[in-house]
Image 1 (cartoon, one colour):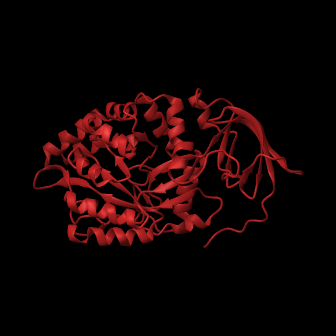
Image 2: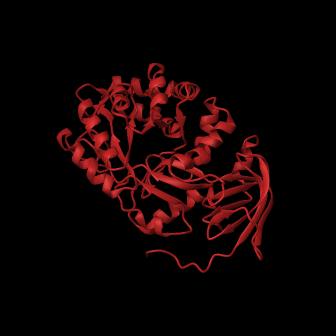
Image 3: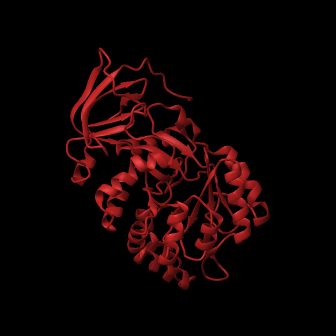
Length: 366
């Protein structure tokens, strides 16, 4: 299957209060894009309500689930549809061992930005998930994955060191710096998996672009992260699995288990401190790992629960994340990816579960 057949796209019209501008306006959708000048014979798809740019799940894994890897198109379609149904209309796949490019050929499925495969070190990551190389080959592998992705490369930067019995950095700092520099030279950005504290200084100094999880972010690092414009995708609902992971490894690695529990216990405080320091925070679920797909609203709720104001979380989950990934908010000529709600979603969290309309590429899909 290479795609779906779609006919000519009709011209549509909607009216509502557009966010973040808070301006009530009429908008026409022509060829999947927003137009502010009237167009004759347009079909009105919604009148009234609040209009929000589509959500972004900036850390998910299409083709993966808690049950394993799924290269079949039927499963990947189901996963993409689960994200779409919650308003996640733009996905950043943070590494996948399967070829999920067919999702990009489907106009009815969320937009997908791919990072190729994880780059990991032998015996220092989940078996079979990443391409495994030694430090001497990291730069070359970054070049390979940069060519296979859509402007992103994913590096696994810390994992349990069985000799130490705890989390530890995977790569020497000088190798990381060279790898990030190579990615930037090739026009790609670098995202790094990192749970603990020790790998973060080297990653930050290397100039990476996105810290994934970041549960080890201590206050002394925040000013530099903010200054460099490095984004953090906390995946709080995935970090909530840390106590279970700790229990599974406690008999053999008690130090690691205690560390994972500590990281979980401080996760909300550290995210709130990062936001207070001006660090860019975005929403990501890590769905496809230990979690099913379609949980963007759970991650939004978790960030609000961490103490970040609801309007700021919605901004981080929608127009700010879209701009970060190279897309637009609800402006003239922008992609018509949006949701319409009966109440202001910045105030009424419950309204997020029941959008009046979901529009993707200018077509009503929910």
